[in-house]
Structures are given as structure tokens and as C-alpha cells.
Image (cartoon, rainbow, N blue to C red; front, side, top):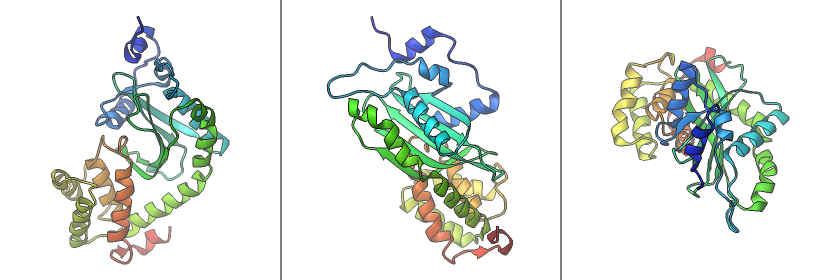
Length: 275
């Protein structure tokens, strides 16, 4: 009798190590909404991959991680932390690779997702993670729209390479965006307008508006003074647990913040703007 992926992993035993407390919190935050549970890379390798058929050739979750890691290294990016999680049946995978960065309070990240049950195609996202609160945000989301076939499995390294080759430029662009957010001081009326636009853009639901405003007035972490950066973190914190599964949410968040809080609408701090 063939065991399911999750049961197989537990039977194998040693691959699932305990996480340090702060890393467990990070991993649980990542997996919360997606219904996945955290495990380490060794545990990921021990998961069974469904057998291939003539029309569907599942790509092992760890194979995606291996290819992305190798490609990142080839283009000069160093992975300093990684967090992985799968749903109880092992069919859906979510991961975050944190890259070595010099920005101080946040790091660049690469988000991964893969499914064996055809729920969604392979996805690779690029964004940031704020150290003090583990807020995740993605500025770009790419989908490998190749059906799971033997050809797709063969082509995976090339497809991943095409996405990661421009990453250095994207990292610099993201740093410039975040610097602009830090320099943009917001009035209360501008914050109110931005939150309404976030609701209209379906970044947040009506039930999360209060959560965003509460975090704006009483931040649970140090996000600095009342700037676009603080508002950005209020929203990503309120979206905790949803971003790994729906990275496009924070792509739209960037669009709304850029349109409402920048473009001459905010008071700009000259000191920060010069950074």
C-alpha cells in the first residue's frame, strides 16, 4: 500500500527538526492562511512525489528549491535563511528564501510555491521581509505557465534562470522604492484616502480596515514615524498569513501606495530622500 506524502515523511523520522523559537514564529506566519505546516529542507526531500502520468509529471517540491538555490548562487545572491511548508497531504508547497542584504532592518526575499494537485502552477516571487516583525511583501510575482510535463521538468532550470537573471536590478529598484516610502510623511487625511483605495483595489477587506488603522495609530513594532513605510508595514502586518499564498496582494499594495502616497501627495523628508 502506498503511503501519502505526509505520513511517509513522519515514518521516515529524522528529517523534521525543531525550529528555534523565532524561526518557528516566522514559519508559522508564512503558512497560517495557506493551511500548511512548517518543515525543514530534509523533511521536504522525504516527501513522496505523486507518480507521473502521460499528461502530468509533478515536479518534486525540493527540486524547485534546489534549482532556485543554484540559480541564485550562479547570479551572485546568497541565501541566508529559508522557510518551507506544505499542506497536510503534501500536495501544495510554499517557501521563502531570505537573501543576504545590507539594508539593516529588512532583507530581500524570494517566495516559492508549487503544487502536485494542479491547484496552481509553479510560482516565483520577489520582495522583502522586515526583520522586526517578519512582514512579507512581494513587489513582483512570476508564474511558470508550463504544464507539468516531462518537457517542463527538463526546462525548469532555464525557466528559473530567465526569472532570476534580472534580480540584481530588481533588488536595487526595490531598495529605491522603500527609501521613497521612508521619506514620505503622511497626513491623516492622506492615510484615510490610501486605506479606502486599498479597499477598493481589494488589497484589504472591509473587516481589515480597522486592523490597519489600529496598527497605524498604535504600531506593534517600530516602523518609524508616520510615513508611507509605516503604512505599508501596517497593511502587510494586517495581511499576515495571506501573502505567501497570494503574493499579488502586495504587488497591488505597492501600486496603491505609489499612486496615493507618492507623486507629490506626501511631505518629503529631505534627509531621507537623499539616502
